[in-house]
Amino acid sequence: MALYTRYLSATATAPNEFRVQVTDIQPVVGAEGKRSWTSELRYSPIMPAFLVPKKGPPSFPRSLTAVAFLFANSPYITLGSIRGYLREDERALTYFTEGLASIVLLNFDLKQVKRLRRIAKGCPFEYWPLKHKTLDASHISMGMPRIRDLRHFKGSDIDLPLSPNIELAVYIEQISASLASLWASYTIYAPSELETLRRLSSLTTKLIKQYEHIIHEPEKTADELTQQKRKNAILSAVVEISGALSYAVTQGTSGGIPILSNRSPFPHHSLLGVGGAVRALTKFTRYLESAFNVRDAGTVIRFRYGNVRKIIPVRVPEYESGSEYKFPSADAKRQEQFDAGGEFRSETYIPLIANFSLRLGFMENKFFVTAASEALTAEI
Image 1: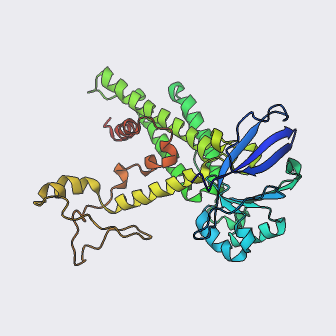
Image 2 (image 1 turned 90 degrees about the vertical axis):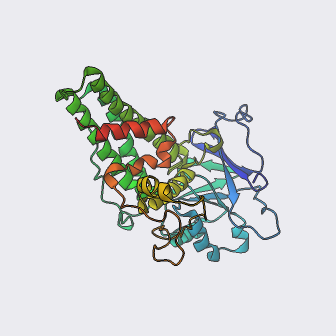
Image 3 (image 1 turned 180 degrees about the vertical axis):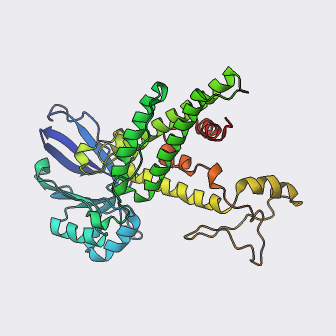
């Protein structure tokens, strides 16, 4: 991949002024410290979107006149849609990234960028006009989707959790702040995850009520140590949710519009961030979740696995990809091992825990799931 990787960088040279360039060598932070205003260098890798068979990577422009960013939520679909509207030389100047600004167009004029944006279903865009490789930030053009184009947008209808308890208050406040920030960002960049935020808010509220119940109505048959363990389980779950959401904000939403005001915490992705990669992994996690939703894994393990009188695996179960990600039909001529199970029981499963963007913040994810489950199912 190193052969195909390029680096888009922006170095601060004066207040509101940046030197922008593309190189095939990874920039070195501080290398231009003596010549720059703050010596601040931000860069991200970019990869060519269209390749020619049996040919190497296309050459990149040594002199930039403009850089445009398309914040396409489905970059590969978007690239397929705009390909037919690009000249051969324009295809060589089209790149994709790991950030929320998933497509980068080099040396395109603003009129063509706006045309491609319409083809890309009106996705957000940002346009940097350059003069002698220098960007005046006051000349940046930006465009956001219109509210009427956001069919999923219903305003901030999420109920943020609150808690009067001193032990929980600091974490609940952080959770509420993160949820509010993510709601604004996900509305634009990850609308499919808005329901996850609602569920997280609901889960946190349930944990708060459970905690309050333990304090004010302790179980008579439980000793003091047991009560404390239950309180600690709930508090641990709340702390983990707070930390995970903080990671989701800093890692999954940096690099949004305006790019220069949303710095990424990753040194090698400090310009555009890794929000696109996080979004892709989240979608892959949802893909796996939907497969497990079709079959009750617990039922398969407890009742079917132990009853099979054959050496396993006889054959690997087939898997059909599609909108519902279902296994082959039970009526099919070939019966696959374990292709059966009870109905999915949503009340005993917390799908949002599997959100990869949240897992980035979990050092001990197994403990968290156990703590959260105990907290929600404990008989008090």
